[in-house]
Length: 404
Image 1 (spheres, rainbow, N blue to C red):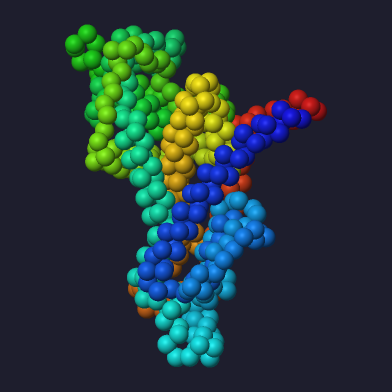
Image 2: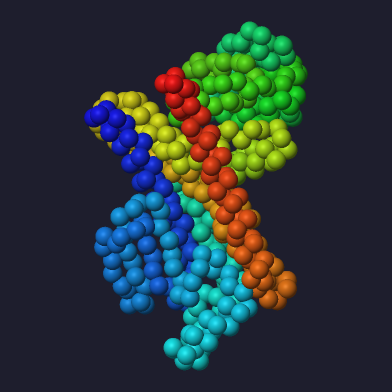
């Protein structure tokens, strides 16, 4: 029982800490831009449920911490529903009520009566804060640790693999993938992962002579210590890790900032490519993670950081660096998800504002209602699908079948 509780704490506590931190930054983005435009704000909450501690600032905003650490939220004055995009009738009623209670001109402090460009910036500030957080964290990481590069040199070719069929040989140094130059093993691996079933052209340096090979990555089941059991595209090579293939350079703050931007761009690009391949029927989507998968990943990176070095000082440093990196990646993911054009998300709000900017009136109430129902269904379906993936990666169904 003690072991189970320890494992639960190992996975759940890091997950809740990272999630609450990232969502708080997201909501803080909305809050700061709204306050800059003079929007009246009722509440900024860290966590949900019953209040643990709270205070009201001089502008009348309640700052509270609640007992359920699953993120947080900002409540603008006049928000009566989660849409924050009332129709014309709703706006008229809200305007009459605000003027009746506070006098003419008071409505100008409410989010819904701000110019549309201000509302759009306030909504976009949440995902922007996630990307900004990732940029800051990556800059800190690259400044503190530097950049390590492992040359994509082949050590072993797996028999009967796509690489063996393509003609890869031990000692080959991959220099180009589909005419794109690669210098790091991670670039090579990322290109493979996003190309299952697609023929790829590899240019390798073989003893000073360039050789062009063609191979098609195939998915295989792997047991990853962080992600669990996943089907992932591989070509069938094991890379060399000799000292001569490692290079390291320290980065000054400007270089670290540029590397951080590059990493964010690469992550967003890879995610967009993967989502596009799902819609094209080329990927099953089993790499998508839900809350269980993210919690397992949080526990996995914690275990790896702790096991890397038993010395308490090194362990603390490893945990700090690992959590910074993990938080940066999760923050990018939350930023991307919130920009999806689904009505219940920030991207859906921006979609409605786009219509309002063109039509010069809010989206009709009936359309909003249908949009939010469809959006909730899509979001619920996405969460169920991701959770199904998480459970499959944990081999839960196989375990339950063994009990029958």
